Amino acid sequence: MKVRTRRHRGSAGRALFPRAACGIAPAASGRGVARGLRPRTDPWLSPRLGFTLIEVVVAMAILAVITVSTWVAFDGVVKMRDTVERTEATTNAARVVLQRATRELSMAFLTRHPSPTQAYGTVFLGTDEGPTDRLLFNTFSHIRLYRNSTEGDTTELTWYTEPDPDNPGLFVLLHREAPRIDGVADQGGVVEVLARRVREFNLRYYDSFKAGSNNDEADEDAWIDEWDTLSLDQERRLPRAVEVNLVLVDLDEEEHAYTTVVLLPMFGTTPAQNGGIEDPRR
Image (cartoon, rainbow, N blue to C red; front, side, top):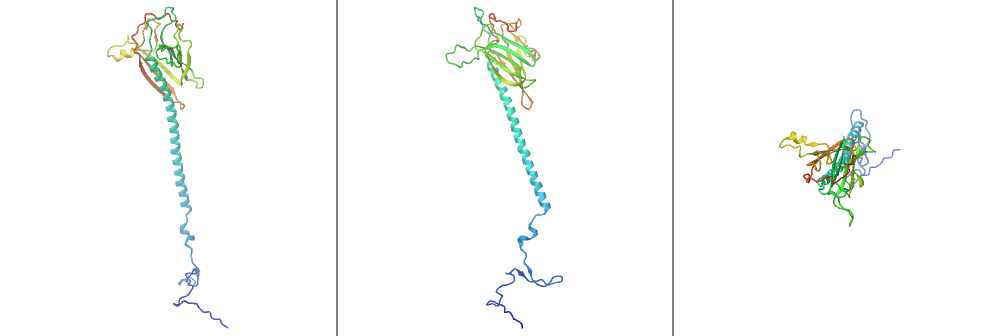
C-alpha cells in the first residue's frame, strides 16, 4: 500500500518551506557530482578568512622590531639625561668656584697702615705645588652673617687642596676663612669644601713689571706661577691679574676644564711695610 504525501503550498503555489531557507541547496548537475542535497557552507568558517603561519611569523617579527626600536630610543634618552645631569652638576660646581674666586680676588688688598704692635699684617702668597696650587691673601669680601658681630669686611683666606679620600688620584678644593686678620697667617678660621673630584687647580699671576708694550711674547712672560709679597721681587705689591685654571672629573671619568682671569683693581697699592707678619712657610 503506498502512502502519498501532499505538498503544502501557498496561495501562489509556492512551497511554504523552500530549500534555500532550510539551508539545503539543490544538487549541482554534472560529471563527478552526485545528485542530491548538501549542507550550506557557513561564511565564518571559511578558511580564506584566517591567517597563515607565515603571516603570523611576519607580524610577530615586525612587532619585535618596533618593540626593540622603541626600547633602544628610550634607553638612549635615559642615558643622555643622566649624562647631562652629571655634566650639569660638574659645571655648576665649577661655576660656584670661579664666581667665588672672582669675587674674593677682585677685592684683594694690602694695607698701608700696619699695626703698631706688629699684630696685624696683610700678604698675598701664591705657591706652586704641582697640579694644585695654594693661595693665601687678604680681601674685603667678608660677609657678616650675625647682627652686631665684631667683624668687618676684611678677612684672611686660603685656597688649597687635599687628596680626595673617596677618589684616589683626585683632590678636594678647600676654602679657609678667618674673619680676623692677625700677625699669624694661614691659621684659624673655618674650612669648607668648595669642590670635589678636582684634577688640577692652577693659578698664574700677571706681573705688570714684566709686561711689554704690544708684545704677545712679553705678555706671556709676564705670567708667573708664584707670587710672594714677602720677597724682594714682589714686595708690597699685588699682581695685576690672576688666572684661575680648574679641571674637574665627572662620574663618567671625563675631564672638564674651566678658566677665568680676575683683575685686581688694587694692584697698584704699595704698603709701607708688611706689618711684621710672620711668614707661614717658615
